[in-house]
Length: 232
Image (cartoon, rainbow, N blue to C red; front, side):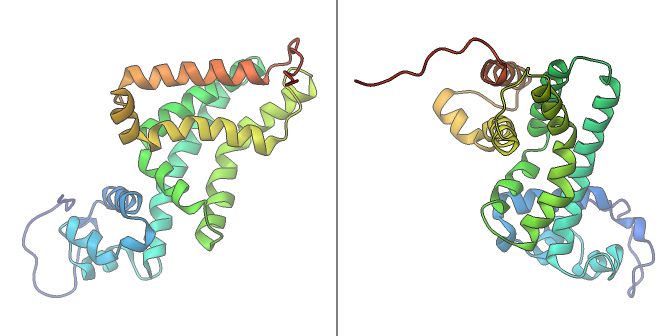
């Protein structure tokens, strides 16, 4: 993959044009590598080779204050996609501000399904990092995930206060909703092998969004509950 915008030969020495690299494309390439190889399996040299850019030009383009380590480029790559997702969700909640709370949640779930299908590498990195206590895991939680889930969780709490949603702890509800949505795409290979479906096809994405809302709201809404089954 060649992400250089200008392939003209340059004089030997320090690069003179920082626009010679498409920074967004480079960060997306880096994110793809982190998702496929894990943080420990990626080096700046590997990213530079894949993008057909010398490591020295890579470092110069980003500047020493921006990229001083592999973790810096990891954070910038995750921040790029995380910010895009958050902006789309913020825009959605502005548009649907006047709607019923439950309808807001249904639309939020559908949007998360679409974003998960569009950004599987982002979700894969989150899965990798959430299993360990680390600076990266803490940064993901506080800087990206909490802001992304904020509108959803506030809406859920408001509906719980109205008695329309069962009083289940927020941690369980968020984990259930987000986990149910994203794991479908994180296990794309298994879904193809086991069920013969391409989870990233528009048909599969729409079907998953419908299924998520059907299953989640049937479990969360306050209705007449059947007595618990017992074993004699």
